[in-house]
Length: 254
View (tube, rainbow, N blue to C red):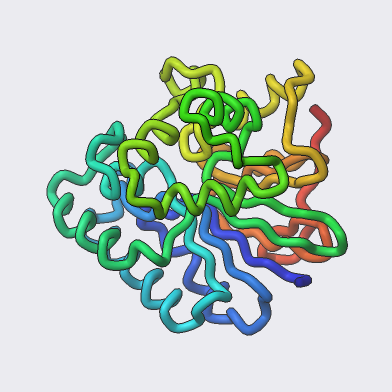
């Protein structure tokens, strides 16, 4: 595994199309979630947003396992109608729900890959180990370990226990006006990640995390994680993160 195309929060945007036309250049293509609920100021129509999502699903169908589709908080409010809606498309609510239901097997919460003896963990908003510890305690999920966290979360996500899935994911970071110190892997925040790293909170060791969710003008790439919700694609190549034009993204110190 050498070259991965990373596509952060979509929200109806089409920046994924051009690089995906060159999909043969990549070993994996990973979407970080939030396919729907476009921003009104970006002038992307609601119908066009859903049609864009369908094009992504068609692309996934075409290339198969090469393409990884992760879910974000905006997606989950259509997958689980108990979830807190955020900028929700009530006009196309039923249509979007039906799409997620039909293609449920296409989506996961997290993905992990080994590149040059380094593990990379992809999710929508990052996985804080303290969130995992809390749900392990609250719901007796003792089988989850740092080594199997991706497999375990994906297995839970596809389980029949929808109430459990709701309860473990509906944990919203205080940085997102929620009540939880540690947000879930769809409701975390890069500011929380930075704060808890600086405080020395327990983390998932020996794993480099890549996520989106927190919109930034420029990517926040550190030696521990990368937050890439910047309205454009990125490439992970030989352990370094690049802009699509080939320029390397600067690593920040935190």
